[in-house]
Amino acid sequence: MPLASPAVSASPAKPGAPRWTTEAIEALYALPFNDLVHRAQQVHREHFDANEIQRSALLSVKTGGCSEDCKYCSQSARHEAKLERESMLELEQVLTAAKAAKDGGATRFCMGAAWRGPKDRDLERVLEMIRSVKALGLETCVTLGLLKEGQAEKLKSAGLDYYNHNLDTAEDFYGEIVSTHSYADRMDTLERARGAGMKICCGGIIGMGESRRVRAGLLAQLANMNPAPESVPINHLIAIPGTPMEDTKPLDPFEFVRTIACARISMPTSFVRLSAGRQGMSDELQALCFLASANSIFYGDKLLTTGNAEAGRDEALFARLDLRAI
Ligand code: SAM
Ligand code: DTB
Ligand code: SF4
Image (cartoon, rainbow, N blue to C red; front, side, top):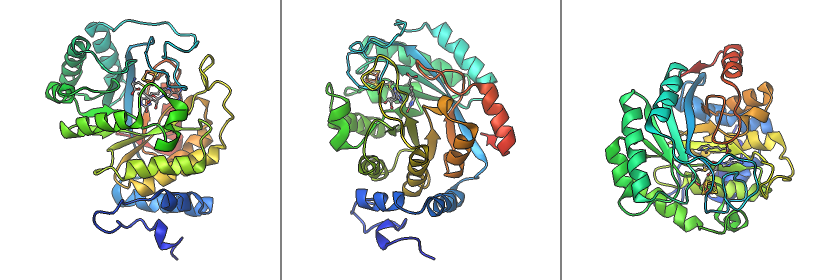
């Protein structure tokens, strides 16, 4: 039986029209929970093996002291989060971490830097890191903030596979979260990365006090990118002490699961990444996220500045759920 009005059809809209409206995604959210998860599984199984999960490792190559004021972030110089600032890591340190990640089974290595965007001389050092990590046989990803003209092409030439740059929320809520750069700035960088021929990793944060409509607006924005991002990280807010979001009211966990399902239905061929926040989730909640079609995770004991679900716990969970790492 069709599950909802034509407005929530997963079939593409007329040529040239946005493929997903905020309203259509809100209608998905409003489906009975079981129907929504079932529909996400159906879409998922058309494009993926439902028992396979991709794993990426993450390393902060430059931590803290960032000029920007993103309210959720521990790395802003304007916030009081307890954090050891670190200057950029040496190449050898990065390579040691990348080798360990590969030995641990990660297939992609993502390097993050707490910058508004890279200065050209910093970029040169990151290019060296990318070349060396790539030479280990890992896929490469970096998240460096806003890119200036020409920088995306340099990253591509160094062998970068993915550029991570999140929209984080819907455009009409962005001003509540960040004042030092705009949504349009972020869209420009995504266009530069895409224009240089890289794959895009782009998603957002759920649980920052936004409404369901805002969550739907974010997903519509992502799903209407042409093509949609190959990787869509859905981060659950980690309410970090010392950031303006430390006291944010917790989100109903089922609303997070609904978001994963809506991401899957609106972006059928993208990897939907169950990202920040896994450490605070029960195994049962993570299993629901996988059932709702999340099919990638960050793997390893640390994210950028906060803890992640430990690798041993992930191994045990994968075994209990018969999931295979790819
Ligand atoms: N400076 C770069 C930028 O802003 O794109 C890269 C690093 S930034 C830390 C990467 C992403 O991590 C953010 O866009 C956000 O989605 C996520 N993130 C940061 N702090 C978070 C938190 N406390 N909870 C959940 N996600 C967070
Ligand atoms: C993404 O979307 N989430 C990752 C990765 N891309 C760079 C970062 C999560 C950071 C969580 C907070 C921290 O550890 O500082
Ligand atoms: Fe800086 Fe990125 Fe954190 Fe914003 S999210 S404060 S740009 S490190």
